[in-house]
Image (cartoon, rainbow, N blue to C red; front, side, top):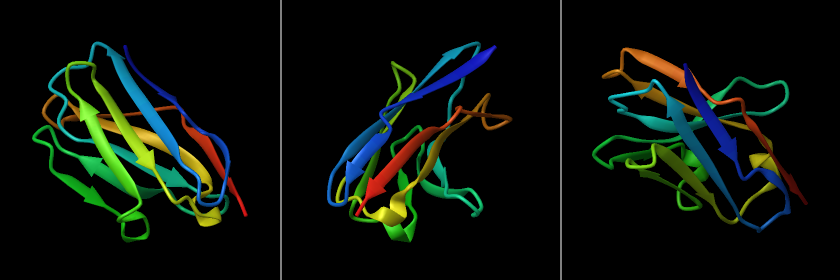
Amino acid sequence: QVQLVESGGGLVQAGGSLRLSCAASGSIFSITVMGWYRQAPGKQRELVAHITSGGSTNYADPVKGRFTISRDNAKKTVYLQMNSLKPEDTAVYFCNVLWDDRHRSSWGQGTQVTISS
């Protein structure tokens, strides 16, 4: 069984910062890409950022320059540092992990991020 446990969401004012974490555990191996997605009410889930096992990163345009994704391979954990937060960043944030050499994908349960104006 594979578990992805997210933490770090919450309510902050615009301009503030949050750091999300997602730790993988269980029978998970050969982790390749780790990423963060978000889903706002009434909208589709969208990619926020992802990072490969080699450290290459990719960001959605709305978060470039404000968010930073990183990972600790030994801890099987991915992080998302979110700065200069805006009300439009309000969403449920989900982590996603591709593992078993990208043959399998697992999702976290989601963590709520709410930015007040």
